[in-house]
Length: 213
Image (cartoon, rainbow, N blue to C red):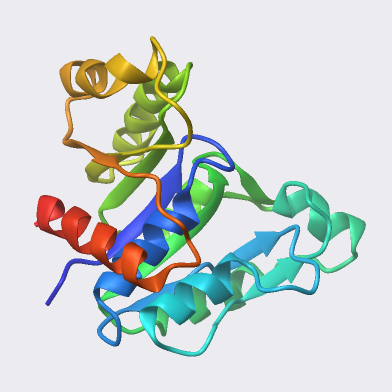
């Protein structure tokens, strides 16, 4: 059976959903891909729908909010607090193998009372963690801190996925080599992929899956 992963990011908008969708497309019909919670979902298809479609199963999501802010704040603003016990039960029912995508970065709060963050979500499912980082200026610091935090939580960092998000410059040309020298975990590049192209997603996902094996 293919490995399951928890997919986190060094920040928001680094490409977590693209990488999750690519791995899901590569394993189409053989994996469950979910994003349990999401904010900024306003009527159209969100990340949870996109990764589920790539995986070949109906979209499944536990909670979404329209307001594009951190989930704990969106829940408060919309008076729809997250039911943590129900969320954890929902996660436990997801069949293996599974790809579970977090929201934002590693320490994004989902609730304040009791305090519950993305790290707690990852601890509960206890899966190897893929850290997605955008190849741009600042990625070294963000990635090294995230890898350290994941390990500090007692979880395995399966790899860092360095996502191509723009044109090459003096920083992006060296970030891959620098991260491989500094991170202490495997670091794999990921090409720029059109997320609306299922074939391109699947091809990139298969290449990444082979590197992760």
